[in-house]
Image 1 (cartoon, one colour):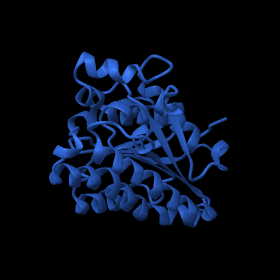
Image 2: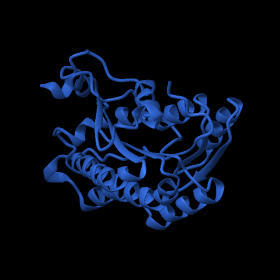
Image 3: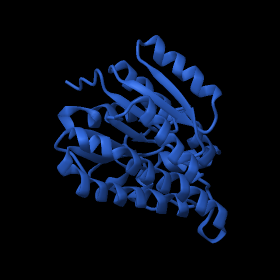
Image 4: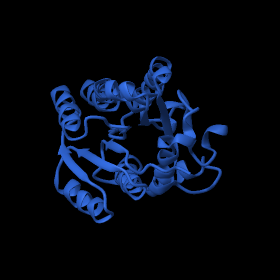
Length: 250
């Protein structure tokens, strides 16, 4: 089950945290990779790890807040692998601010990366998927796309948009063998979580709402990506798999 040998994937936001874990899990499943992030040093280290696992890996730096960089990333990816079988839109940003203090620049930056880049990168890479009648678009959303979180107005709005964009892509592209799904984690032990919840009080408040009593781990998110990328998940499209420890049942 979940045999991905010979597939080609692009993972955005791959230099650390969830994206890094996803890239390594795909490599262990036999996938050749293109990995992307805003800066290059950590990407090169990850690329070396992937190559040590026996898979091809190409690192491309791109600032997904800039639309020309999104288009360049798509073009370079297609030059390396004419068909990207698996696209994991993982890159994301959060600017924790109360709703009354949310700045326009924070709002725009959040939407440029979390929504606009995700959509247009998918749009650029879907045609070869359609041509071969097989493709997987996996968007890393968040429980914040399903429920409200204090001090996260822009982030929640952007992840809600990711949920709906993913459904539209599923509606339009599933008939061509291209599925589109979301993975929606709760707080995962990553540097981004440290930034969003920096104090013991903030962490305790979040933990109190998770019935399993802990934050998630990056490998738990990567495992769901491997499943959604597989042939075994071919009948799942337009859906969201939550990794929230029971938070959203309340």
